Length: 85
Image 1 (cartoon, rainbow, N blue to C red):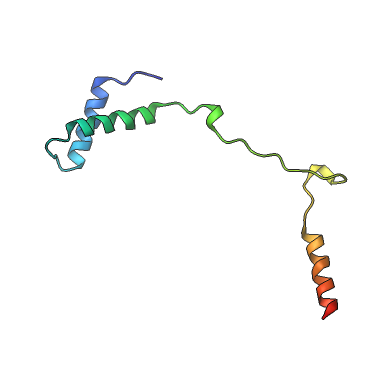
Image 2: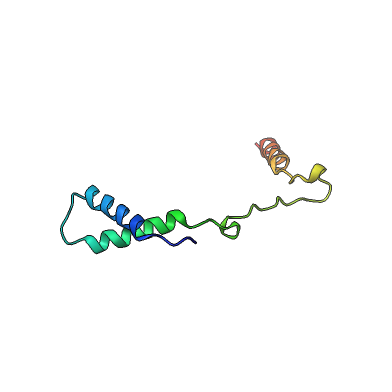
């Protein structure tokens, strides 16, 4: 991670101070907030922190490795329910 310069933090802190209406006595809060914001902005995203996609489960006999759908079983159940009425 690159070291943040005093000038970068100072400029961001000044912007925060102005955005908040130039309040008195909050300079440390603005400085720390500027450090956090800039650190977050300049922190590289590592591949380990990105979520991995799950592989679809496959059942025996499926074509092209696609997961088996539950739709046929649902249709059969509906037909059987209609026959009962």
